[in-house]
Image (cartoon, rainbow, N blue to C red; front, side, top):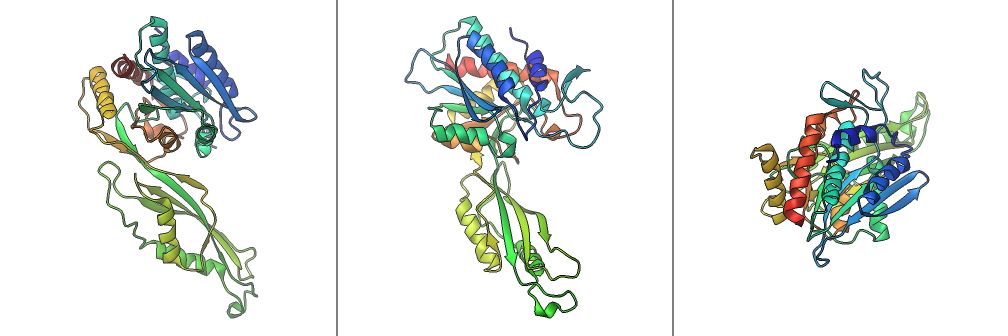
Length: 373
């Protein structure tokens, strides 16, 4: 049996901080393991040092679409606060510490180890298994988008996104619409503001108007309501000059089925002609799967089989590569399920319990046995 805890530590020790990313060495390490086990592995670099992998283990019935696991190899920067543990990875007192431990190298290690176990056991799979290991998720799902543009993904009967959920089954996550808006005016001497047109005041009026913005969509049973946050406002160049330009950014988190283009049009209508939007900085749809879907039910059974717990399905507020991959795979049922702790993502002294990695490894193995055998 492949040890998922050791593999997770190995992966954390690869520096894949994005920017710049540099996922290629980590991807190459996984490619060697998978090829040795009989996987057909293809690497897809989209920039120097930035490589995604697609690895396939075929089933005996090519008419059946495979089960797909996905995870990203990049991490966010360490931050400015000092770490009490080695950010390049260490296991201490039942926890794997290091950048990417929870988000999400523990999840990647757990499903890679699970499928390696299947491959080495020579078990007969009617349905194949595909792994999609991406670069650049933390900066806008760049690797997943590159794979989708290339058209190399094929089909999927179900998609498991191994992002951190504390091994709870999530059937939905929010989408993201990140926007930059601008206001314009005319400069004047600060002592004579009436001769100018203050772009900062226009922007603050826009911010105030956004307090009352209504998305016009029903709440989601797992995700609640969409949200809108003003995350920055920058304007002016000198204390004694009326500013003629101002920029603000908005972070909208959306629900499954919500039309981003319509939402943007509604924002424009509410804010009026004084506010001009740039093309979206990020435009990633939400993900959702019905609890009654056969794949969702199989995933729930796999969790129950391993944990002996009947937990309610949950939704996650963040976005994942699933925003790109679910559509690229033709709208396949998608679940989010991983050993990491959501609250540990991007934190100083990030950690994941080693016991959670082992549990996820067993859950993924159980799902392969049920869905693919």
